[in-house]
Length: 392
Ligand SMILES: Cc1cc2nc3c(=O)[nH]c(=O)nc-3n(C[C@H](O)[C@H](O)[C@H](O)COP(=O)(O)OP(=O)(O)OC[C@H]3O[C@@H](n4cnc5c(N)ncnc54)[C@H](O)[C@@H]3O)c2cc1C
Image 1 (cartoon, protein in one colour):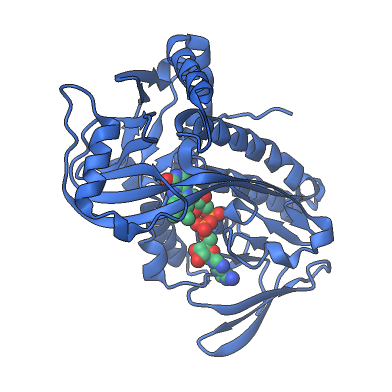
Image 2: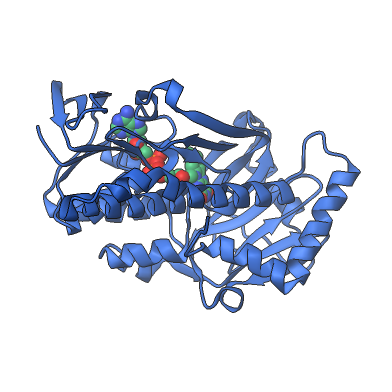
């Protein structure tokens, strides 16, 4: 098999890249380890920045998102028994976010890919990369029992944090930067209408809670917990009781419904540099992870491949390698901005293990500042909706 760009992973990064390349007449093959059913039902992120929404529309895969996605013009921060709204349009020159589940984005992208007739292979196994320093790198894999070698001009490693592409780069070349947080999120999806029009980020002495949603009839809720929290200790009533306590506000009620999905997610910040080696380019979670507090993971993955697609286009259409050479340096500026924002939101809103009354006072002072100073609020807002330009 031969293609121009071999793409490992059919998550948001791999699928958006494949579609961008298709629209520029660049061939690609997408290889995905899991089944189509699995990737289309994997519940993960749900907040799309304005730039992500604009790109999906530009790609022609945004129709359902525009119909079913929920446009939000702000978020609420709750602490000390009060809610404070951060209004995005007035603080960011009219920008908003859209709530639309990652699995829905993935469904739309898979449908668009299949409609192009270009290859997207599910359930590939034993994926490995060879010759990535040569001009014809290859991806070896097994599909439907047949060992196959796919020769490419370039390989895009879009295979997430647990993928194999990052490990194909010699360890001596890579620098890793990481921070593990001593807490996680217990997340549920409930068949209940959202109890508020916007997301509520609640700082509480018992721990952080988040009220979010996926549709007018499905609520997504999170509780700060231990990273290794045992879900067996969390029967449904205990989850609702704890959410009620942490989100409590006089006169407000949290709608309850059947819990259809429950899981614990650890929190981590992680970046690997550089994001390229030879003819291999990493994008999305394969190269960086953020804690979900800033809602940046999916958006960063999409921002990476937008740059990569432009760089590959410059190479194919103008024989210009300079954009590819600069790829890692260019995307890492946005990555580190998002890493800082995600760490900052996480540190401000979570009960800090081992923290004392002084830490709590600092967090409350920061929350009071962010919700009372228009300049501080604008900083949060512009990062949340996504910065168009990240300097450096
Ligand atoms: C449980 C969970 C909850 C999350 N919640 C949020 C949230 O609320 N908000 C937020 O902003 N972000 C959240 N994120 C992060 C966000 O979902 C990711 O940042 C986003 O999925 C990144 O997209 P990606 O395409 O880079 O990677 P992924 O979506 O991980 O896609 C990688 C793909 O590669 C495939 N793959 C892996 N290994 C191989 C291989 N060897 N060969 C072929 N294919 C392979 C995987 O099956 C997967 O389909 C969450 C992540 C997780 C894990």
